[in-house]
Length: 119
Length: 208
Image (cartoon, rainbow over all chains, first blue to last red; front, top):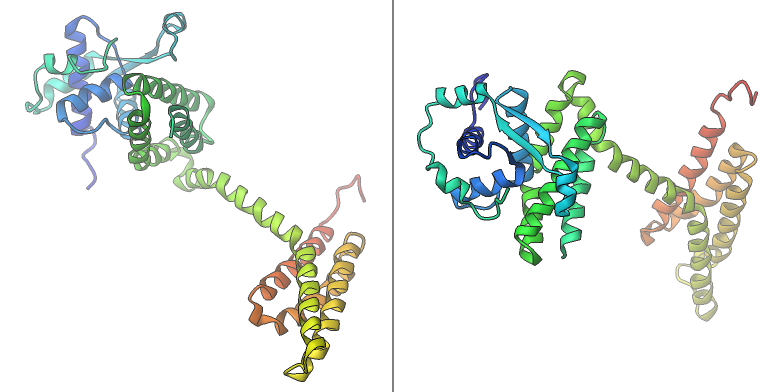
């Protein structure tokens, strides 16, 4: 079934909701694995597949609902890990989330307490 | 299965499906996956982490391919599909080329083996059917023709191909029951024909 142009998939809404939660919590940026772990903690299932997650993030970014930037290399190097690509919700993203009639998501606190999501 | 193997598989698959993309998009996807693998294996080390990392990669394959096709939409889906299958196809062609290259000596060796086995059997007892007497010398002659055609084909491809085919095909068809003979004979003849085709290509001005 082909979706309507402009419509958001449930996963995209989940990601936008997570981004909005991050924004409200004072740490507005999140990275791919953090999103996978947080959404898993809500659904209770396995971690999101790479292809599914990054395709959704790419689509949200290309629609202007998220913006992405690369972490400062020095920060990553100091922690001995690869650089993270950081996402942040935009005003358009906030609006799209508000417009979506999607109220079945759990509260923000459950997402941000997800295991393995240390910033 | 260890962590570096799982990580290598994830990144190898990503290199495969991002082949042909513009440099920045490809580098960003690879860097993002590199980071994801690191975080995943840091949070879930050991076998469980490696296994779930591979599972995430496997379950995401349809979405990866769909994303890749979307990236190529302006240039057409056929182009994207061609790029994705180009590398495995190139590898298969190289393997086929290598198989063709070794077919003549393999066939000659097989014919010599046939000559030895049938010759030894014919010496010990009355061969049945009687025409088996000629198979051993025929096989030796065929092996010699195959080797001669193969070597001579380097200088005169057409003549070499004729000599090789004369040695390879009749005995190959006569030994159809061995299963091996026909494909080997066809491959050896195919190798000789490839030489003929390559030699018949128009030369560049510098070589003319």
